[in-house]
Image (cartoon, rainbow, N blue to C red; front, side, top):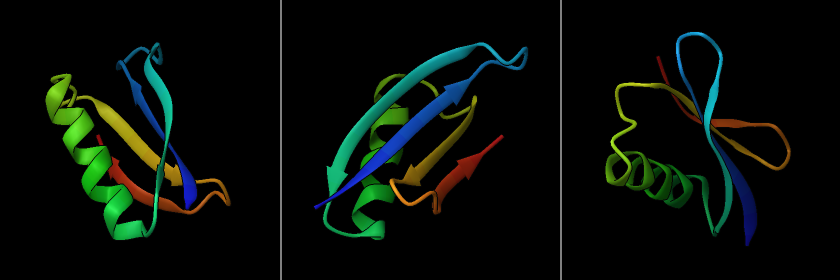
Length: 61
């Protein structure tokens, strides 16, 4: 399992969400990240999901 970090920002730079989760692959991390965004109504906010190594797996603005 690899740790991934999901972060959501407001337009002014305020951090709305900053949490970590584990996934077995980048595809699984992308799916989990997208699901978390939808559950918390953050899909229209600037967001990113990165691996512990710093690789970007999900991004939106």
